[in-house]
Image 1 (spheres, rainbow, N blue to C red):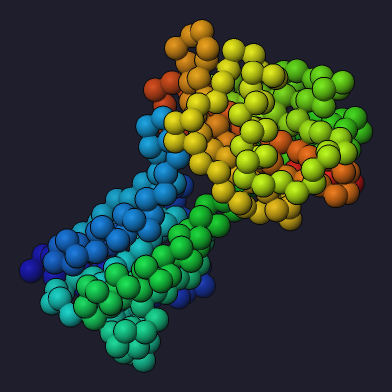
Image 2: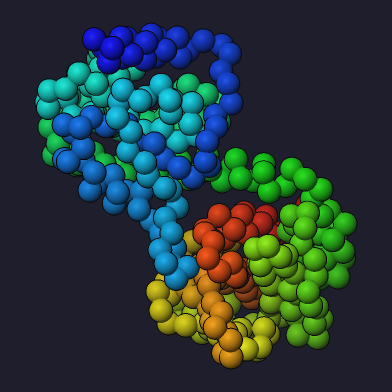
Length: 337
């Protein structure tokens, strides 16, 4: 009886979710709460883990989102978290996640979902400001699985874009280094937004190399470029060779390994770029960690750029530091701003 009363309270909260005032979402930024009933979970856990299991090797794998599965009776405890996902297999009888789905979706949309169409729904600020709330519904497990296979990448991006937006506000909310950014623009005709505690480690103007960084955890952010490159079309091989040759030439005693190295085409601030991620190691000491590089050609300056991000934080998680550095990289520009 007590659990039934708790669930009535949860449903009442859903009814009033659309009121004007909503608190700010809270909790761990990259934690995803997945609400699923005990009956549904064995059927859907594998596909949820697959959709949200993207990882960076540091060298231990660290996922972009830490998934926590929640009993629907604990829904009220997590409904104002940053990342919330409710999963419901309507054809498997239970009285928990199914009732949440029926309370959130209008009857016509619920009918479509249980009929095999539009199984994946996502919206912002449903229970709290700064939140992404999604609902995945299917009549049978296979319907839900097929819906996630079709729209899983899209669903992942909804959470990832919101995470990046929140982290961007966090990274630059304290004493952004505008003077340093302006100094780099005047010297080199490129700019980026720089978090408050970064310092210049090394500049080599004759080698087109700028290296900034910060401590605790150690983060290195380097920019290197080639003026008027002979090849202006950058392919997978050119990008990979440029990245792997970089550390011994500019960092000294650091090399990038072949382990877990991955190269993929991406978009970076309007440029078609290559993104290379992998592991670095010290050639003399027992040190190492993850790195990410971007390689792209800029027509405005006729330069081939390489941006390298490197983290050293033994015993600690590194993915948040990497992602914050990627946010900085995505502010890189070669116009006057």
